[in-house]
Length: 164
Image (cartoon, rainbow, N blue to C red; front, side, top):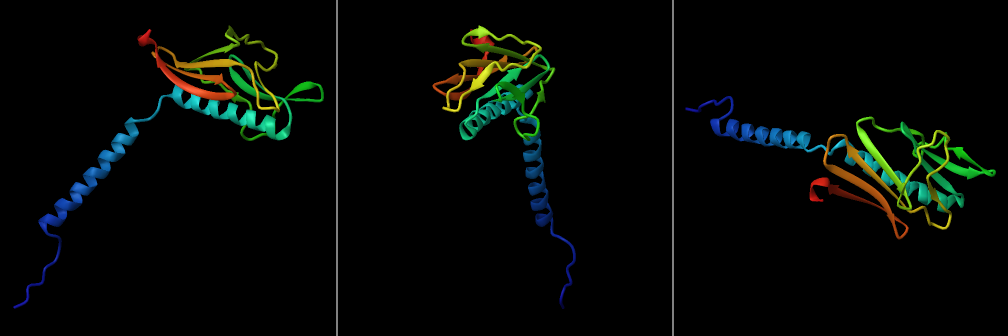
């Protein structure tokens, strides 16, 4: 006599439940490990500044970057004046995040956040650029992300103010 079995065995159901549990734990871990807005912003600005430096070299034109109180803007020196990049999809005018604090120094002096758009950081066609340091910090946070120039490289570091 042949037995007609239908459905799943208990072992098969347990294996599926374990696999689903493992997948849910990975999903929960990935949701909780999001980087801070300060880290994301610092990384984005670092990459944009590297791109501006490369653009100055490739186009043989002087590029500039201006950090204002509410936005940051890339400029190109053309026809004896600074012109805002308007049609560039990457190096365009971007608003700064209000929940972050920005501190820019040029040659170890605090930068002036003027209303007029004159660049604080300048990228030359020979690959050199201004000596600068930009600290980005989430308000009421101890972690500071610093973008700085060193030997014609734009680097990113993280520090904790508790260490000092």
